[in-house]
Image (cartoon, rainbow, N blue to C red; front, side, top):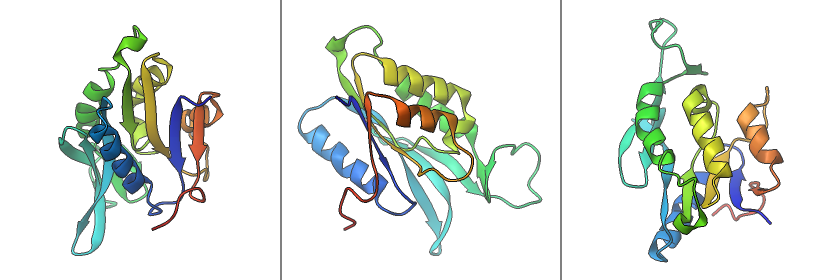
Length: 175
Protein backbone atom coordinates (compact mmCIF):
# COMPACT_ATOMS: atom_id res chain seq x y z
CA UNK A 1 0.00 0.00 0.00
CA UNK A 2 1.21 3.50 -0.83
CA UNK A 3 2.31 5.69 2.03
CA UNK A 4 3.23 8.70 -0.11
CA UNK A 5 1.34 10.30 -3.02
CA UNK A 6 2.95 12.33 -5.80
CA UNK A 7 1.27 14.11 -8.70
CA UNK A 8 2.98 14.52 -12.06
CA UNK A 9 2.12 16.16 -15.34
CA UNK A 10 3.10 19.00 -17.63
CA UNK A 11 3.43 22.55 -16.29
CA UNK A 12 0.12 24.35 -15.86
CA UNK A 13 -2.05 21.23 -15.57
CA UNK A 14 -3.11 22.03 -12.00
CA UNK A 15 -0.79 19.99 -9.77
CA UNK A 16 -0.16 22.82 -7.32
CA UNK A 17 -3.83 23.83 -7.31
CA UNK A 18 -4.85 20.28 -6.43
CA UNK A 19 -2.18 20.13 -3.71
CA UNK A 20 -3.48 23.41 -2.24
CA UNK A 21 -7.08 22.14 -2.23
CA UNK A 22 -6.06 18.85 -0.60
CA UNK A 23 -4.03 20.78 1.98
CA UNK A 24 -7.07 22.86 2.95
CA UNK A 25 -9.23 19.73 3.32
CA UNK A 26 -6.60 18.02 5.47
CA UNK A 27 -6.12 21.13 7.64
CA UNK A 28 -9.86 21.57 8.16
CA UNK A 29 -10.09 17.90 9.15
CA UNK A 30 -7.49 18.41 11.87
CA UNK A 31 -4.72 16.45 10.16
CA UNK A 32 -1.25 17.69 11.22
CA UNK A 33 0.32 19.06 8.05
CA UNK A 34 3.37 21.10 7.10
CA UNK A 35 5.41 21.76 3.99
CA UNK A 36 5.62 24.12 1.05
CA UNK A 37 4.40 24.76 -2.45
CA UNK A 38 5.70 26.78 -5.37
CA UNK A 39 3.87 29.58 -7.10
CA UNK A 40 4.47 31.43 -10.35
CA UNK A 41 5.40 35.09 -10.02
CA UNK A 42 4.02 37.28 -12.80
CA UNK A 43 4.64 40.86 -13.76
CA UNK A 44 2.51 42.56 -16.44
CA UNK A 45 1.11 39.14 -17.39
CA UNK A 46 4.57 37.64 -17.94
CA UNK A 47 6.08 34.92 -15.76
CA UNK A 48 9.25 36.25 -14.16
CA UNK A 49 9.97 33.44 -11.73
CA UNK A 50 8.76 31.26 -8.90
CA UNK A 51 8.34 31.73 -5.17
CA UNK A 52 8.27 29.14 -2.40
CA UNK A 53 5.49 29.49 0.17
CA UNK A 54 5.42 27.46 3.37
CA UNK A 55 2.10 26.27 4.75
CA UNK A 56 2.65 28.68 7.64
CA UNK A 57 2.63 31.54 5.10
CA UNK A 58 6.32 32.41 4.82
CA UNK A 59 7.34 33.34 1.27
CA UNK A 60 10.71 33.51 -0.46
CA UNK A 61 12.28 33.50 -3.89
CA UNK A 62 12.94 30.22 -5.68
CA UNK A 63 13.95 31.73 -9.02
CA UNK A 64 13.81 34.82 -11.20
CA UNK A 65 14.49 35.57 -14.84
CA UNK A 66 18.15 36.18 -15.51
CA UNK A 67 20.13 37.49 -18.41
CA UNK A 68 23.11 36.00 -20.16
CA UNK A 69 25.19 38.80 -18.67
CA UNK A 70 24.30 37.83 -15.09
CA UNK A 71 27.29 37.60 -12.80
CA UNK A 72 29.00 34.33 -11.88
CA UNK A 73 27.56 34.37 -8.34
CA UNK A 74 24.34 33.06 -9.91
CA UNK A 75 25.63 29.59 -10.61
CA UNK A 76 22.32 27.73 -10.47
CA UNK A 77 20.22 28.04 -13.63
CA UNK A 78 17.29 26.24 -15.19
CA UNK A 79 16.69 27.62 -18.65
CA UNK A 80 16.29 31.37 -18.35
CA UNK A 81 15.77 31.28 -14.58
CA UNK A 82 18.38 31.87 -11.89
CA UNK A 83 17.73 29.75 -8.81
CA UNK A 84 18.09 31.47 -5.43
CA UNK A 85 19.33 28.46 -3.48
CA UNK A 86 19.98 30.42 -0.28
CA UNK A 87 16.39 31.71 -0.12
CA UNK A 88 14.95 28.29 -0.99
CA UNK A 89 16.98 26.44 1.64
CA UNK A 90 16.32 29.11 4.28
CA UNK A 91 12.56 28.54 3.97
CA UNK A 92 12.23 24.86 3.15
CA UNK A 93 14.92 23.07 5.15
CA UNK A 94 13.61 24.07 8.61
CA UNK A 95 10.17 22.72 7.65
CA UNK A 96 11.55 19.35 6.51
CA UNK A 97 13.95 19.10 9.43
CA UNK A 98 10.95 19.03 11.79
CA UNK A 99 10.30 15.44 10.70
CA UNK A 100 10.03 13.09 13.67
CA UNK A 101 12.27 10.16 12.83
CA UNK A 102 11.50 8.33 16.04
CA UNK A 103 8.00 6.91 16.06
CA UNK A 104 4.50 6.81 14.65
CA UNK A 105 3.14 8.96 17.51
CA UNK A 106 3.91 12.17 15.64
CA UNK A 107 2.15 11.27 12.38
CA UNK A 108 2.15 14.18 9.98
CA UNK A 109 1.57 14.94 6.32
CA UNK A 110 4.29 16.88 4.51
CA UNK A 111 3.52 18.82 1.34
CA UNK A 112 6.51 18.95 -1.02
CA UNK A 113 5.62 20.88 -4.18
CA UNK A 114 7.88 20.34 -6.05
CA UNK A 115 10.79 17.93 -6.29
CA UNK A 116 12.09 19.37 -9.57
CA UNK A 117 15.22 20.62 -11.33
CA UNK A 118 15.42 23.91 -9.45
CA UNK A 119 14.96 22.35 -6.02
CA UNK A 120 17.41 19.53 -6.74
CA UNK A 121 20.37 21.92 -6.87
CA UNK A 122 20.22 21.69 -3.07
CA UNK A 123 21.99 18.64 -1.68
CA UNK A 124 20.52 19.44 1.72
CA UNK A 125 17.02 19.37 0.19
CA UNK A 126 17.70 15.99 -1.41
CA UNK A 127 18.83 14.61 1.94
CA UNK A 128 15.81 16.10 3.73
CA UNK A 129 13.36 14.60 1.20
CA UNK A 130 14.98 11.18 1.54
CA UNK A 131 14.74 11.46 5.32
CA UNK A 132 11.08 12.43 5.10
CA UNK A 133 10.35 9.52 2.76
CA UNK A 134 11.82 7.03 5.24
CA UNK A 135 10.50 8.54 8.50
CA UNK A 136 7.92 6.22 10.04
CA UNK A 137 5.41 8.86 11.07
CA UNK A 138 5.25 10.81 7.82
CA UNK A 139 3.22 10.84 4.64
CA UNK A 140 4.22 13.02 1.69
CA UNK A 141 1.80 14.70 -0.66
CA UNK A 142 4.04 16.04 -3.39
CA UNK A 143 4.65 16.83 -7.02
CA UNK A 144 7.32 15.67 -9.45
CA UNK A 145 7.94 16.66 -13.08
CA UNK A 146 7.10 14.40 -15.99
CA UNK A 147 10.12 12.53 -17.37
CA UNK A 148 11.81 14.77 -19.94
CA UNK A 149 15.42 14.85 -21.04
CA UNK A 150 18.04 13.68 -18.57
CA UNK A 151 16.51 11.71 -15.66
CA UNK A 152 16.57 13.42 -12.27
CA UNK A 153 18.04 11.02 -9.70
CA UNK A 154 15.76 11.73 -6.75
CA UNK A 155 12.66 11.93 -8.97
CA UNK A 156 13.40 8.48 -10.41
CA UNK A 157 14.11 7.20 -6.90
CA UNK A 158 10.69 8.47 -5.77
CA UNK A 159 8.94 6.93 -8.80
CA UNK A 160 10.48 3.52 -8.13
CA UNK A 161 9.65 3.31 -4.40
CA UNK A 162 7.12 0.65 -3.44
CA UNK A 163 5.55 2.98 -0.85
CA UNK A 164 4.86 5.74 -3.42
CA UNK A 165 1.86 6.11 -5.71
CA UNK A 166 2.33 8.53 -8.62
CA UNK A 167 -0.76 9.95 -10.31
CA UNK A 168 -0.39 11.55 -13.72
CA UNK A 169 -2.37 14.37 -15.31
CA UNK A 170 -4.89 11.97 -16.82
CA UNK A 171 -6.20 10.91 -13.41
CA UNK A 172 -7.80 14.14 -12.15
CA UNK A 173 -10.19 16.52 -13.93
CA UNK A 174 -8.57 19.51 -15.55
CA UNK A 175 -11.17 22.02 -14.28
